Length: 262
Image (tube, rainbow, N blue to C red; front, side):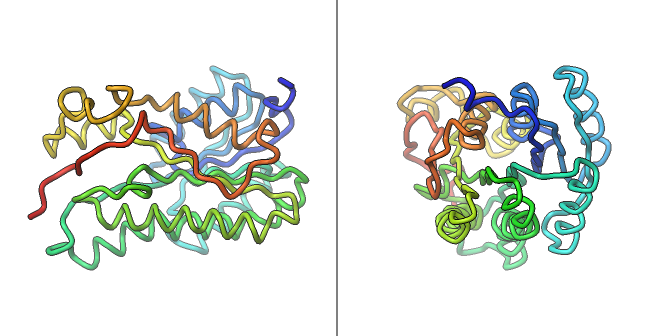
């Protein structure tokens, strides 16, 4: 049964792979035997992460600087990955970020930015990757949603709506591509203590380690590595009969938004 977790011989592309959850996912994929392409807009940070992963896992890890909110750039990125590795078996749509603000005063440009990064980018990358994932014979897409996409988060309304949309994209893509043996699933992390998240919490006054943590069943934030375990499971043959699902990795549901908006 453990053979299902072995990713030797496969190639995985992780967007937003240079930091936080994306970096943890890419590292674990490499530890399981996959060669890795990581993508994000920050070329300097991305190259450093690629070198670090390659040294730690003895796998081939390449960096692809790109803005995945640009459909043509996403297509060229996928072509470059396949050109470099010769194939693509796994796509992790992890790139994402939240803006803060209540609906009453949220600028339309902020809404558009959050939807572009958290929803549109996954569609662009998936559409570009699907011919190669079909050719793989065991292609897998894992979209990184959020608990905000399940329950909603006050003060992060554009992000919440985009992540909910990502979950529906996951379901429909699974239906459309399942006949070609391409599975599409999502993971919805809850309060996860990445460096970026902790900096964001500090700005908003969100006390993730204090009162806020008591709203969750496990009474603590999660780690990027805990999210990565779920993602890599869904990307592997160990999950070969799972598709169209969203798996919450959230420590249990929360009860309050990030900021007061009214």
